[in-house]
Length: 116
Image (cartoon, rainbow, N blue to C red):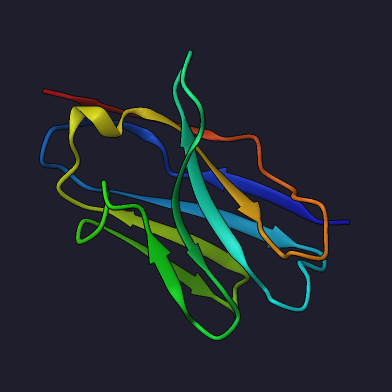
């Protein structure tokens, strides 16, 4: 059974940085695909970044050049380094599995608030 536990959220001023962590346990699928997405009330969730077992990563245009998805396979932690944060980055951030052959599993989320 896959379990994902996020941490590292908080409040920061515009231009600041945060690093989110997602502790991963269990089998996440052959592709080892992992993702971060975010959600704000009343809006559809937005995919932020994905990475697969080969190290191929993809980013939403809105975060490209500012965010970095970084897996530590030894510690089994998925990181999301967020730099140059903007107020529009305010959301609850979730990590999730994204193997095409398995149901998605996501964590409980961690709140990120960016003030101007």
